[in-house]
Structure formats: C-alpha cells, structure tokens
Image (tube, rainbow, N blue to C red; front, side, top):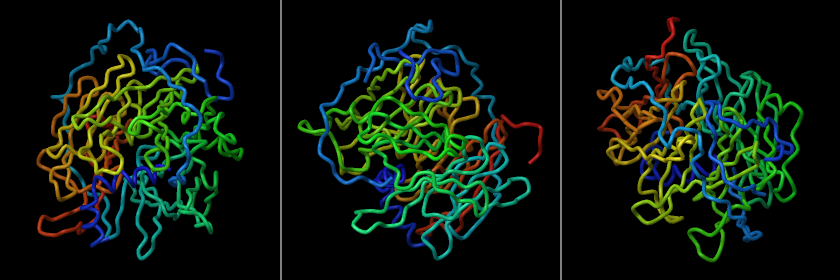
Length: 458
C-alpha cells in the first residue's frame, strides 16, 4: 500500500530528477492486542471527549454517511501547555566525518537498522532485473546476508517485531483482469526462507506499519479484516481495532463527495512504540485513535499559504512516544507538490510545529534519534539535482542547524538516512553525483559517528 502512495508522492516531488536517474539506472478494547492506556513517557495522550464507533484500489462510490470525529484537544497533564524543560545540548553535539563503507554500481538504498544496531538493512537493485535484493550488512565484519529477492523498495522493508528476520511488501503476480498488480506481505527468517503472510493485502481492511512491524486490522471494515497465519502474531505486532477509519472521512477537496479512487485516499497507519495509539493518515486526513479508551480525534494540520489543506504521507512516532513527525505538503489532487515540510506534533501539548531549513523547501527524508529528542533531516539544496544537506532538529522547539555543512549528499529514493538504535552511528546514502553529469555515477553508503557513541569500536 505505501508503495503506491509514496510512489505517487515521490513522482510529484522528483519527476524531473527521476528522468535523469533513469539515464543511469473507555470500555475494554474488544479484540485488540495489546491494550495500553498511557504513553511510554508517562503523559496522557491526545483524546476526544466522546467514544467513536499497495495497490491503488479501483475507484469506489462514496460509502455510508461519515462519522465526523471531534478535533483533538490538548490533554490535561499538568504542563500548562508547555513542554517540560529539556537540556539544551545543541551546541555540544559533534558529529564525525562521513565514512564510506559500501559502494556499488547498481542502485542501493537503506531500509533501516536491524535491532542489533550493527547490521544495516539494505535494498539493492539486481542487475538487468526488475527485482531487488533484500540484504543485511554487518558494518563491522562486512558480512552480507540475503533474505529475499522481490519487486519492492526500501520503505516497504523492515525488521520483524522480534528481530529474527525481515518483513516486506512486494509486488504480486499480475492477475488476469486486474487493473494493476496487487501487493503481498511476506517474511523471511533467512536465505531461502520466504513465506507469505497475506496475499493481495486488502488495504481497505488493514494497514501495515513498517516502522513498528505492526499489522492494524479494521474490525468494522466491509467483510472484516483478513485472517492471519499463527506465525504472524510472533513476527508482527497485531492490533485489531473495533473501528473502520474510512467511516471518519468527510468531503474536503470536493464539496459533493468523499475522496475515493486515488492512491492518497488509502489510509496508512503509524503505531506508537507502546502500542497504545495509532495515527491514521490519508490525503488530507489525520486521525489519532486511542486503543484503551476507544476514542478517535482529528488533528487539524491547517491550511497552507496556497489555500489547500495540509496533508501527510510519511509519519513516524518518536522512540519515546511523545512526538509524531510527518512529511507534509498541500496541493489540490492532481497537482505537483509545491513544497515538502517536516511537521512535528507534540502529543503532550497538542501543538504542531513546521520545520523546513531546506533552501528549496523540500525535505526528502528524516530519522529520529534513539532518545526521541532530535531528528536529522535531509533538505534539498538545488532545484534540478537530488542533492541534500543534513540538518539537526530539536524536536521540542523546532530549532534546526546545518549538520556537517561542508558536505552534501545524493540520497536514495527513500529512507536516505537512519540513526542506529542506542548505538553510535547514522547511516545515510551518500551517492556520487558530479555537477557536470546528469546522473549518479557511484552508489555509496556512509556512516557518520554520533555523540551517542558507545565504547565499542567500529
């Protein structure tokens, strides 16, 4: 599902650039597991005051009258709307110079880190094939393990919940009479161990959150959510919510109907690390659902300067569960995206803050620090070339400063930067894109030593 949604967004953001690239290459929750009431940081979550009841799917007719959920209100958590004081260590942070650890002639991208903090999860283009290889790369030994080969991309590849293998969404085989190939959800515990979990994932009845390896099933979806094999509950966090978020939609862009039938219309889900809250987002909606109280509320991201409602297409909770960081923009459906911002929602205060230090106002990727207080984002430097500069952002106040200002990086198609969990490195795509050539000449992966380093040498 995210494959189709993000493909649409990326195509809008980098249509010209990709053309160049092609030249080179309440009551107890019923059926929910687990059910947790408070955030991992000890604060209350945003709540509403009342109870509430990827291939692009073919266009569908508007369904039942939507159930309009209330706007989210700041919780009463004793902070008087102010974030708690945090140590200002921005000036003390010092990052080392990038170190090239891997090169290739074929496109290679970062999907994230394995839980051990020393193995990168990579997606590498197979030569003369449409498919990609899903591999882990040990940054100390250089050992590579290939988990699977599939038609996928880095944003759809992730470690399993217990860390023993990987999950991924891949293009399914084309079915006669089907408008486009479906998407299968699969797992692999090692070489030659690929197994299907859900064939033809029904994204109108469930969502997959790669960041937390979660499957969110909608109990009230027409026909109900799909059945899962027993192994799925060991490899994924499975949440069955007693709602159908599609019933919360209401007319926005079009006054006479609810948006249906385009990729941005499909809900994605971001599960908070403690499993207590789910953010559902689709163009142009953002809802928060509390599993313990069975309440939903809508986050109003406001209207941008072009008069269109702001929407998000990539949302991830901070590791401590306090903040929800999102890539956001605003445009009428069918138009190219004029900008891409980083928007941060503070679930303790209900405030949203927009950050964009990019000279071109295009944020291509971001990653959370292990403690949830900082983000690193990639901001576009030039209009015609996919070359970025890193920025360090304080999540509490939105303060952003250039990181390694003497360096610029040509990132991958997705997830171009990833901070190791509780370890000492930031991994990022650092491909070579000379100014006098129209395309990337060498694919590279780099490591940046961080101030959160442990005592173990590389």
